[in-house]
Image (cartoon, rainbow, N blue to C red; front, side, top):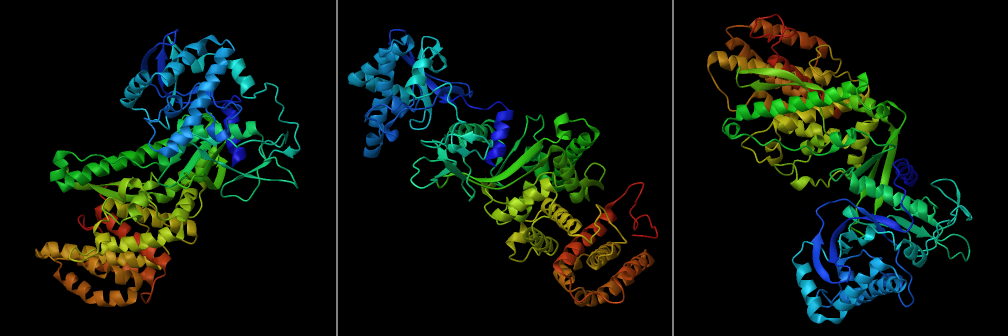
Length: 634
């Protein structure tokens, strides 16, 4: 993984200048050219500035008490026991502040003009308690975080960190040598394959943004008898040694900072981050993985469930069309040419430093072209025909629904609360989520656990009894149920042996599918009979018998035979139509209903039931509603 991040950083020109790092300077202490204090100026921009990032190794100061040159934390630059929280901070930041002051004084002694006002200010700050307390008061009313934000100085109108008059002094004091040859060592780099000089000091840390005050991304190890040089690095989560030079390690840190902070190619719900070999105009991975924003229901919709459902369906259909257009554009070439090339994308799981370290795993990559092909396959496999109610025309309309966003799956399956989880923090299914992401982008099978959960959830949805204590079933919405069906369809298609279309397939060879259709026709028969007789029931037959019919069709349908006869006898119209439909499905099932269905066939049962019901809603030129139009088929 380090190698691919390094190559991305090089391709994007992110190689760092040795001894420097981009930092977000949150504020400047503004001085005039004589060192007189003016004010504290907070930055209104989020642009990072290249700042010195290698502490001077001054005599009497260890690595833990060193400070950064010119730009550091406010508690280091303006340390006082007044702002320290406890004795531990006093012990930690007293030497850091003194180190910072000494660096400035040495630069002043060397005759660097822009540093002299800073030296005057710091002398006054440390010696004049009244002046120091005034500065502390002013900084306390800013939004600065004393131990994590970066602060620097401005002399007149010039920010000192962007000045170059101190550059030679800094490089000399920080031990930076322009012609440092990293290709003269005795180790081969796992990143570039070159002969490298090993890292002899601390390994670089990733700082800022999601990394906070700093977190190690490398683990060091020793090599060779008596060898005191830290010559190799390991990725956390990997047992493979990854020797590299200091410059290569800094380049990797720069690449990680770009991906995780600057362009924010990270999704917290799935714990993944991704990057591309080159800059892309359309971050297709972000569009398909990041959590969507819910559309606020209008006041009118809140009072009318049908209007509310109608508006949600219109929005969902628009999203489906947008994503379909994106993929069709890819096929027709209306996208950046790089996406039709052999450039690669990369995805990896990442854990952030709750335990003080980064953890990387499950990296995989493929070409941009394969990414589009596999996404196209995902959308095709997930497409299922569904309907929404048109409140104006008072009729149902059909459209193709897709799983446009991977988060929809987690939202549908993680149903321990009404909203599917608080704040989008989905902690379940860590391993399965990684497999799910790979299924979307690499075209592999979805996790078996998700399929089994979907089969169980759809049973709860259809068989939900409002008088029961089934809180999970109570929270399965129409949208969640549609997503569950799509998930089942993808699994069966990628399992082999199943041919599942986006709409009803009467000749489907799956016996579970045909059993599902049988129950859907019983459901429609009951509904039509009750309409013609003007009667009502508290619970439909499909709701009462769904779980049993799905697991043990023979037993359930033997119990339903009497209901079929009763409801057929009540019909004043269309009795022959239902008899013909039952006969047609019976031919597909055979002489007997199966005693039990496997989990896979239960998934097919769900699709057969849902798609047969959906066919009753369709009213278009190709397929009309068979019952209402008195056609020969339902």
